[in-house]
Amino acid sequence: HCQGLYGVEVDASAVKKVEGLYDGTWLLDLNRPDADLGPEYEGFFSHILMPMSLEHTYDPWYVLKKMNRYLRPGGSVVVEVPNAQSWEGIYRLLTGDFPYVSGGTWDFSHIRWYTLKSLADIGHVCGFRAASYDLLFPAPVDLKALRSGPPITTLQLPPPELGDSCPPICVTFPVDIREIYPLLL
Image (cartoon, rainbow, N blue to C red; front, top):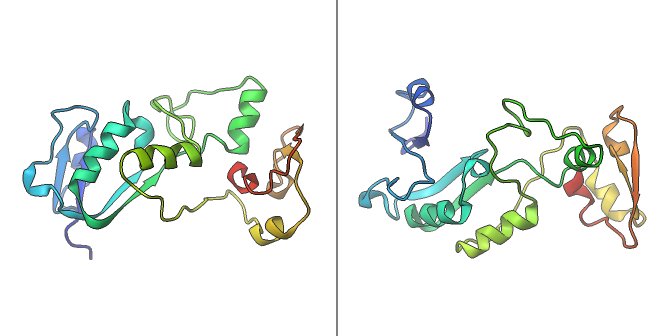
C-alpha cells in the first residue's frame, strides 16, 4: 500500500515485470551522464533504496552524488552491497577460488567490491553521513557474547559460530580484532 514508489532499472525485462506496481519507472543506466530523472524530481524523494545495485556501477561517487540531487532535505539513502570483507570472500581469496557466477555475491556483473569502511568513505565523499548499518548474517550469531568475550587475536575461517564444514584456515593477528569480527561473519 505504498504511494510515491518509483523505480530505476537498466534491464527492460525487469521494467516489464514491475509494470503497474510503481507510480513511475525509468529505464536508465545511472552510470551515464545523460541518465536523468528530470528537474521535477530534484529534492523529491524522502528515501532512495539501492539494494544490490551500487556494485554494478562504474563510478559509485558519481551515482551517489546524483542520488543526493534527487533526495529531499533530511531524506535517506539505503544501500545494500555484498561484503568483500566477509569470511567467505577472504577464504576464497586465500584458497585461490574466485568464482564468477550468475547472481549472488560472486555475480560476474559486479564491477566494484566494498567493505563497510570503503562504503562509508564513498558515502562521506558524496555528502552523506552513515546513520546506521545492519549486518546480515547467514546464521544466528550472539554479538553480545562476542563483544563481551575475551580478545580475539586468531581468526578461524570459516568462523566456528557458523558451523560451516570447509577445512579451516587460521590467521593470527598481533591485535584484538573483536571490533571488526562481526564484519567477517
